[in-house]
Length: 123
Image 1 (cartoon, rainbow, N blue to C red):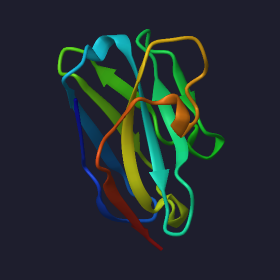
Image 2 (spheres, rainbow, N blue to C red; image 1 turned 180 degrees about the vertical axis):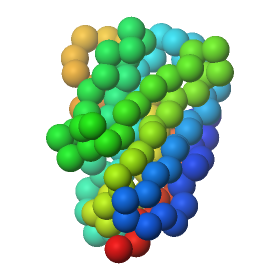
Image 3 (cartoon, rainbow, N blue to C red; image 1 turned 90 degrees about the horizontal axis):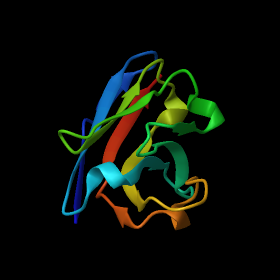
Image 4 (cartoon, rainbow, N blue to C red; image 1 turned 90 degrees about the vertical axis):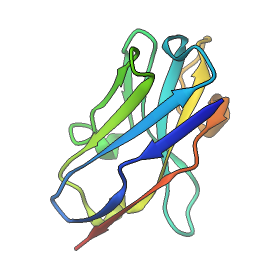
């Protein structure tokens, strides 16, 4: 199983970035895909997730700014980040969860993790 996140970088406040996570080694369309982030000195936190049925979940701080989407033909999940703020600075991780009952909002809910991509938002 591999999850390869990309698209991070340095951006000014108010700018945009699109993160991508390419998956392989499992049946992508049958998995919930999530994005988490971890800022320096803080715990990893949930950002967004999308189910096999395209149902989406968001943490309150990114609602309306970070739509999540998936392309099952490309085995890829995206996080389109806009109106970025300095507090969005973190390493962003993608994760995969086998479809099963429950709401996929914590790190314990996911089975596989990617290596992370750094997003830095300057003020």
